[in-house]
Figure 1 (cartoon, rainbow, N blue to C red):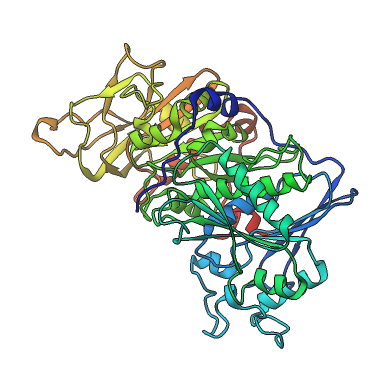
Figure 2 (figure 1 turned 30 degrees about the vertical axis):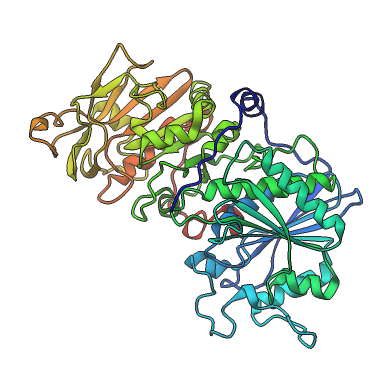
Length: 533
């Protein structure tokens, strides 16, 4: 699949729009309630988030995840539920079809063929009065009682509604005021810093027969909008598509005067509360991130489900350019292609990442995320004073042995929860950087955390060069900390505990001083936190 490439329209305009600092808006004078769509059920575990104020205004219902193979809308809704409002009610159901989202399938697993498609489970004929599935009936009954003034359904599709021209289609049905809402959402996407193929289009057309929005529009004439993002099979456009959906919703709510200028479309998390000790980690998932199911960013977020106090949120270059990354404590750049990662960040995004670290944020890199730190090309961050030991940087793929240094034992080694952890381990290597110091290039020197004790080579001239070079490094940049791994400790055979300790070791001091490790699951299978009761 061709990856969507987002281009900043004008460097001067982008510098004004993206480089400025902003903080998540605080919702004063409003109430936030959380409940379940289906009570007393572990299978249909679908949470509802309600924000309501004392000020009169419209009731807007936002749903996502009707089909489990459309994660973009789930990501967008999980962020939107944190947006404070100034009037009316905002109800968000970010993970409607919980079992299908868990399984990553379009339809509900375990259901008979007559009822397994929640996307077409709602009344489509005049004599039909309820949906065909337990969850469908609960959502339908909830909506009959709520009677919202507007419903927005966040979806994604391989159909881009424009033969390669559009990235997001805004489908609407209702009176002329609904068209104005859809147009407000489209304009917001146009202002989001992307041009070319990812731009949005508004389409006035009937809703899909049997869908929740079609049934609500037919029975109650409820204005409805479907925000359908173009879906790439690689997964590297999920964050970008979710961002476009956030911008559409932001434009709609802004048009309804439910939001004010303090709410930013890239607000992904709520303001940190005094009792919130979680480590907030932005995981780069944009172009240049590996799309492999074996160690890609989404696979990693699922595999980290046992880290109770870690909160992982996928991001792309757009979030770096808009400074949304300042909502996090640590950034993670994993395997893939560092050149594409750097390009997708753009000049402003790279500078924002460097400023994030320099101001006290943490950075963890693996393989390409290590290369990204080095002064190799103009699209690199150019922080670490390191260079390749050989003119050909690819050393092949193999399992190699690595050993911790004394500093590595402190930052990556045995902890209270794993006191018997080994200081040597086998680790997967896949063409990661094999480096030596380069004091004349880059900004700060590195300290080895682990060394390669065995090697692999791709060319005869590389023999003997890998042994005793650093497999993991540490550096301080301003007030921030960096740990980067040349190998892949995040995947089997590990050492995964070294990798996990990387995040706590680069975390801001406030977190490190109260750091704790846990094996209690934070959420099933690494889903966004909004999918958890």
